[in-house]
Length: 362
Image 1: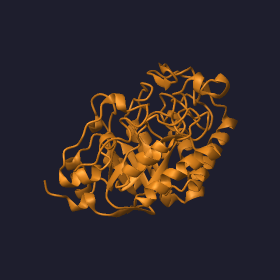
Image 2: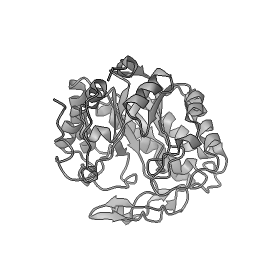
Image 3: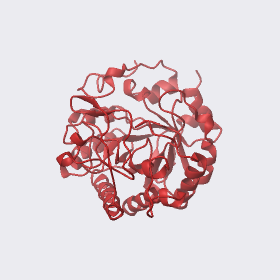
Image 4: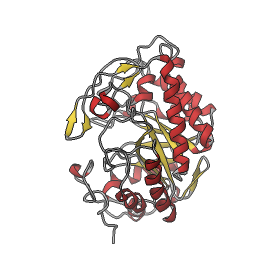
């Protein structure tokens, strides 16, 4: 196979340098402690993958309330900051760049994961479908309670504090997780937001929280080091119904985000489970309305990625599962080396096996 210089050429995403146009997508691996503190295994894991042009970390809880899965990391205590600092130091020493994905799961949680067994929070008291990962196995998400209007300022403050902690931990920037039907997207979609206050009803109101969170995080980092992730037609997690007008709703939001001059927009193009369905949404229109750097994600292989970069349909392409078993994925894609395949049992939980023991290509 011949190399494609555009895919492997250096670039900048906002103010963040990137050695190539291949991003490592966020991958929940459930290897942290139940206190959200990463073990030294995470240092090895991220260091091994530092040849990615940009590493976007696994989704990371901004608060105890934001947790929805067992063994996922946090960024709201000094211990979290210390553990992540070891990761960022290792990535930088290996020549890489890394941003932290900021996460609040909203209704995709369980009372056993909440402080004092409290109900999860959401824009509206609508129970999610599917399952979440708790200690000992899987369980249906618990019935959430609707956030009071006056509580929302506290959520925004949690994002601001998490962004400050990410800076203290040595990251190169942050990504606001407004995708995959977690809290911010629960506000965006009229299927999960039945509010009648300033955060519900009109598209401007439903997208308000995502915009306010992005503004709060940009106060810490500057907009040129803040990205944001969207997934307009993904129904996972929670078997979540789509918005009644995905193109209109997410197009409006993309224009608002573009006015902020954020570093990038990162889109999950299509479904993450079952048939992709990306043809049912105009992702290129979303890219144009945003007007800045665009990271494409979901189902790309080397040739599709190279074509997207060469044709100007993306500024970077994010790969997820291939990075699990191929820490040297960039090298393998560039040289045409066959990719290893990770079994699903290696994805979540456990120790080094299936996490840090994948060899590089000879």
